[in-house]
Image 1 (cartoon, one colour):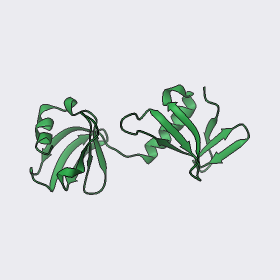
Image 2 (cartoon, rainbow, N blue to C red):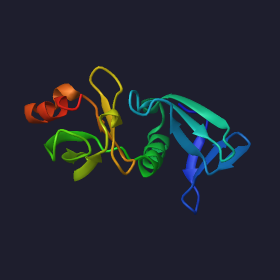
Image 3 (cartoon, rainbow, N blue to C red):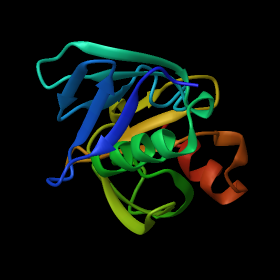
Length: 153
């Protein structure tokens, strides 16, 4: 159970209410957006002050959790790669055809160092336009995708 309320105002901004304290334009921020997306979140005021710390999203009432998830989804864009269909070449720059949770797309890998290892199994790939793509678990990729990816690691 939370000790605050969260609503949307007429302009669509989040409004934080706790006892006699009200803040409009509140922003949820994940402490570990990739490693632990549903844990360790902060609600930040427009002035940049932390209003609330949330250990786990699933500990919140459904209505508050839904508002936070909706707000995060509108601000965050990190497509997750599920398959690498093809690459234009094994030297950079190269164009990759990938399947993501947001649909099929193409990314431009300018240099091998734009592939960053986050953990033993997770990678973050930044394309030539500054968009970050996530591979959450290399081991869950199909053999063809892993073979293509291995050429760049």
